[in-house]
Length: 480
Ligand code: AMP
Image (cartoon, rainbow, N blue to C red):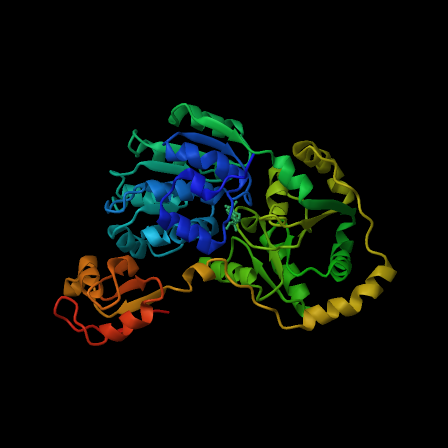
C-alpha cells in the first residue's frame, strides 16, 4: 500500500502549508488513525505514547474543524503539567498559523488576571492544567458556551497526580454536544470509567507501546550501591559522551545535589523540578531544547510529554517510584525516528521493583557492566573536549515556519478603541499586501500585536510608520 500523505485527509491548504513549514512530510501512525475519525467528530480513546506525534494527531483535525469567525473558545485541552500545556499551545499555534488559530494556555503560578484578559479576546483553543482551568470556569472568565471539542491529554498521568475530581468537575460544566478525545499511555480503571461515563461510544485506538520502547531505545541497567552512584555516573558519562542527556532522580533535593556536584566538575548542566518557579522551569527547558547545556538533572516533572529533540541518553540515577514512569522517562529519548539509550542504576535493595517494571514493559532489561578503567581512559580525551566545547545551538523546529513572519508592536489598543478589524482594514490597503498576509492579531489595553505573514513584514512596518489606524498615528516597531 502506498504511504498516506497529509493530502489524503482532505484538509485545507492553510493547514497543509503549516505542516510543510514544520517539516511534517508523512503522517505518523497515530495521526493516520486519528485524523480521519476526529474530522468526523468521533469520540476517541487513544492509547499512545508521547513521541508518537499524538499532539498533532488531534491538533491537525481540530485546527481544521474550528470556525475562525467564532470568538469564544471551541476547544479545550487538559494536560497534567504546565510545560506540556505550553508546548501543546505552541503546537496549535504552529499548525494553525495560516488559518490564524488563536490558542491560549492557562496554568497555575501565573497571574490570573493576565490570563483573564487573554481569554476575553478571540480565542479558539484553550490549553490548561485542570486546577487553573476550573478556577477560570468558576470565576466566569472562561466561556464554555461554544465549546465543541474536549481533549484530555496524558489522562493516566492526570489521574496519577490526583486531578480526577477536577477533571470531572470541568467536564460537568461543558456542553453535552461535543466531541471528546482522551489520549493516554496506559488505560487504567480511572481512564476507562471516565470514558464510559462521559464519552459517546468512543472508538478505541491502540498503538503498541512495545514498538517504541523496544525497537528504538536500547535499554540496560547497571547494579550499583547507593554510595557508588555518583562515581558510576561520572564514568558512564565519559564513556557515553552524550550530546544531550537527562538524569532522573527521585526527589528535588537529590536533583539539587546532583546538579551542584556536576556543575563543580565543569559539566554543562542545569536542573528542573517542581520546586522551582514556573518561569525558571520554562527557561531551563527552552535552553535545554536549544542545546545551551547538555546535561539536565530532573525529577519526573520532566518525564511527561515534553518534546525535546535528540536526547541521546537517559540515565535513571534512581529507579522510578511507579512502573509507568519508566516508560515515560525513557520516552524522552528515541523520539521522532531517532534511536536512544536508556541506562538505569539499580541498587541491591531495588532489585525487587525491577521485576515489576519488566513485567509492565513486557521486555527483559539487559544487565550491563559498569565501564572498565580502560574504556574510561580511552574515551576521556574526547569527553573532555566536548565538555569544553562551545555548544552548537539547535534550530527550533518552528523556526522555518516562522521565518517569513514578523510580529509588529503598536502602542495603542483597547483604550484607544482600536479593534482587530481596524488593523486589517488599514494594513490590507497597503500596496502589495492583502488580508491573507495578516496573521494573529492581539489587542491589549494599551498595545496591540499584529503578525505579518509571507515575508511582507518589512513593507508593512515601513508603511505603518506614517499611516494612521482609526485616525490615530501609532508608534510601531518589530515586537521582541
Ligand atoms: P508528540 O508525540 O506529540 O510529543 O510529538 C513528537 C514529535 O514528533 C514532535 O517533535 C513533533 O513535532 C514531531 N512530529 C509530529 N508529527 C510529525 C510528522 N508527521 N512528521 C514529522 N514529525 C512529526
